Image (cartoon, rainbow, N blue to C red; front, top):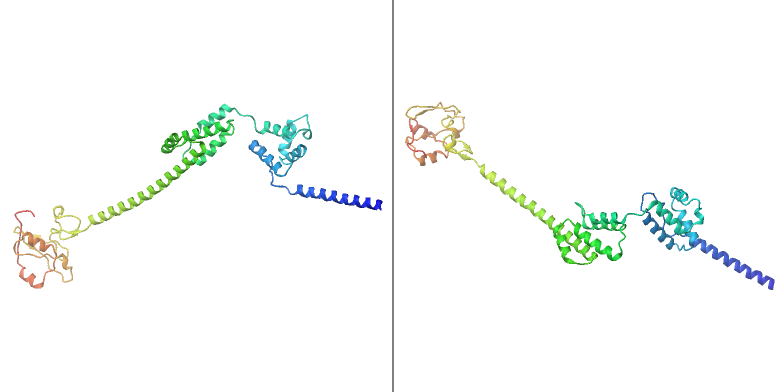
Length: 321
């Protein structure tokens, strides 16, 4: 029947409309990304650009809807500041552009281009700062210099070349005459090469120092090798010419003997338990250089030798050995 048919059609249309509305609500409820509140003191230009991308990602095109999304996300503090700035107008009567411009006047005041460019052209690479970090700081300073794209590339290239600390890299960049991006990549490559070369040089220096230190240590150890003095009959580091000769005539007990005018040495009685290394071998007659060399060997005398050379006399040499 027509009535029922009309009701059926109306019901179908109502259901379709309800489905469309619910579908629209579901689409809007699935928000892409997020926007945090704006904190005074931060860069509002960056925040504004992020807000534009946020609205575009969520397909918010209506100007009134843009205003609502913007005002509900800047935070209560910024909302109050913006509300006071646009008085006597109400915030809900302004366009999205008017709201953004009012916020820019409060949180992104216009800068002096000349001063900003002076900061840019005076910025040099600092100690310990890599070229990549240096270029990032240059690009930040260039944001407020109002360079167009062509001027910006040239300015970045020139300032990077003049501000680099390494003279070798600076000279190569001056002679390259390449665009900024190519000059930047070349500078990064040369910086890495120099850093690698310094590291290799440090390793080689440590190895050379270790080798030299070991050689000196071995030399000192060799220099301290003990020798036998034929005057005092002791092992030490002194030579006979530097010996004071105080221990030249000691008996086996450590007591000193008495030298007569003829050079005879009267020793005390020998102790059988004393060390045989401290005894003196007395050779009759004049001692020759060969005899002194044999005497320096410190050979322990046999009993027969002690009886044989018991009454031997020592005579002083006419010449010094």
